[in-house]
Length: 187
Ligand code: HEC
Ligand code: HEC
Image (cartoon, rainbow, N blue to C red):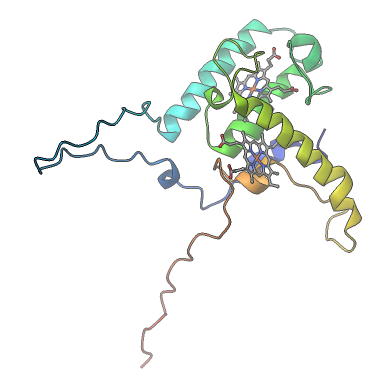
């Protein structure tokens, strides 16, 4: 397990993860020119951030109903194919799925799972997530401890540290807001 509790993600949501990152692209307006536009396959309807949260809550409610009374038991005894999250309770596993994974990446459960077939690894994203978990563990347990003079006793990273609500971690900071005083001549 990561040294940083995955739920710590809940407390470090970036202020710049805004609705805009999920904004739907406006449907293409039909071209006025007589040239026939190439046929574009309609993309799967994109969910709004609110719909994503509602969908996650719906799936969680269904699964919680199925495991009632077993929430405190180890995830690997309650669920079928637990490899990287052994040792956490079944209830905590669901919280990690919701906050640690989905929220950190800005997605619904369906990004990694076919709903109802939670134990299957039919989507590559699920195995990627396992690899990301292993990578995070290596960073936390092997690489960070080798760096001297850090501020924290136990410095650590989690999914949110890199992803910050996006599938592809950024390589740059968002543009800073314009400074109100900039360019304003003082009298
Ligand atoms: C970024 C990918 C990702 C997202 C998003 C995600 N999961 Fe998972 N899920 C995984 C991985 C990886 C495992 C297996 C963990 C392991 O091997 O220890 C898993 C395991 C599970 C399991 C255990 C299944 C079993 O029987 O073995 C359940 C249940 C589950 N997820 C539900 C959810 C729900 C509900 C959501 C949305 C709230 C969700 N997951 C979002 C990656 C994801
Ligand atoms: C050190 C930074 C870092 C950390 C920590 C990290 N990731 Fe990633 N993750 C990346 C990078 C980089 C990519 C590749 C993005 C790309 O395709 O260019 C990625 C990609 C992914 C993808 C594929 C996204 C897609 O396009 O479908 C998943 C799923 C994922 N990460 C899950 C996780 C999970 C779950 C965690 C926490 C256990 C995690 N990551 C932690 C850096 C990180």
